Image (cartoon, rainbow, N blue to C red; front, side):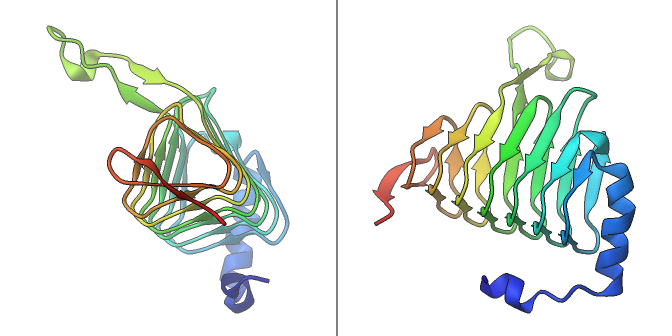
Length: 181
């Protein structure tokens, strides 16, 4: 059992929050810890959170339209004030650690010259995060990114593209800096 889960105390408030969200979300597994001030926005029926997950205070998880899907796997922790916004699909595997202030998004705006930015459509590409992935504080995971099992994303990294199993990525833009041993 991880240090976090060992010290996690399920108060009646946490149990009540989970009970309320179970009705709103597409699926909510057993013993999911939902902290205070967590928001599941716009289309919560498109959000799936598997058993034993932890969603810490201030997290915002938003399915931005009627077809956007978000899946969070078993034993995954979503850190304080983390934002996960899907216009297409974001999949997060089992046993992941997502630190505070992480931003995961599967879209951005076009920026063609001669047209106002706010009138240009979103471009979307699914984000897939494998199992046993650690994403450090303040990292940003951008559209179309695939992070394979066991990878580590350093604090503050901006990731766009493909991260292979057990690789460690850091920097802006993120590049391979090492491998897990």
